Image (cartoon, rainbow over all chains, first blue to last red; front, side, top):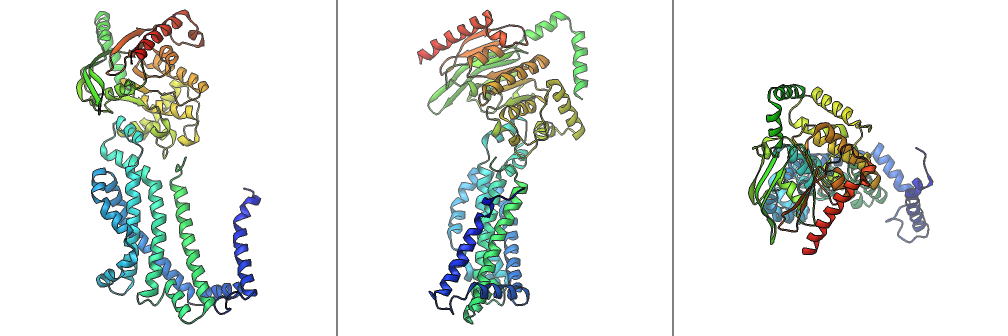
Length: 252
Length: 277
């Protein structure tokens, strides 16, 4: 595959942002203590990742987010299929699902603190709770919106209700399930980072950002923010790649 | 398994006298009695009766919204009737093997399966082992002279190829009756002509009782042994027109005097029904 000029377009935004940043530092638009130059920030990121605490914190956040998403998926996917396979069942719990999906997960921290204490369990379970509702909602809709013709076709060929569910509805719901998973993992990351900032944490990216700010170590703080951004972006990309691999028919 | 069945049927046929055989053949294959169906306020069918002869290709034609598709969907058991009885040699739809081809092949095929896996799917539902499934499909490919790559996914194929796969999926089980709901209306004209010939070839080969809903009168007559003309709802049988030009029919058939006369007659009946509404 040959690279075309168009393929380099996304880089323009990155270069533009860094140029703007340099210019703001050079023109002293912002207090230099609050806005260090890009070089200082990237140096902080590099040394933090290789030698310092940032690398360990990064991995800790990856671990918590991954665990939360796995737990959420393990609970929400089967449940979503169950709910989605009967429209009546889904309608009867729709309000409850929508209500808690709309409730900020951060409002649940105190409750989960009471249930699980101040350890990792709380951070992971709140994130799993938030992600699970998003995944559940998407899976159920995916199953419910399976093409009627396809279901009829399977029935016409003599498929039982169970076969229709496993051979048609499940696969029909996969594209929507992946939408749920991508939204779910993003939400899990948000919740984990917030939890790391405030719930008696000793590690994690959230804690790193918070601590750097407390110590007024701005290059470190920006480094941690960028690390969190890179993590969120990579997780989204990872799920997109898995989706393209397994749901090759989506959108065709 | 299937060759065995075919062989035993042949043996049976030899025992029965030719006269008795022809009597069996004249008995209708499908009997529809007292069929009723309404959608909210509209009465689509009200005590509708119909006999469908065995081994014929019947085109169903009628005014828009008269319930052509609803009729074959009820006969195929995909849409429940409000009342009435539909029997296939005295059996219900659940006791027989049938094939159904939808208008919208894009939504009827399984995009996550390769074409060949789509065709094998109904055999898989019958728990046939992989080798027998492959044999079935191979024989069907030979019979139809199909020259497309069946290892592609449906979305990698043209519309006509996809509909051909749908038809193969419907007939791979050797159905006793085949239903087609406007199978070619989503295809361009060139592909439609090709697919008509494929369907004819298949019909000549198998002589499976076939019900074809069409919104194109030329196609309806061209393919049919009988054209079933329906009235506006509640639908009645207005005419059951025979057309027995020899098969395989070709482009020349379209300008044949008998074809033109039959088509003109159907059109006249159709226009009369449309004006009534």
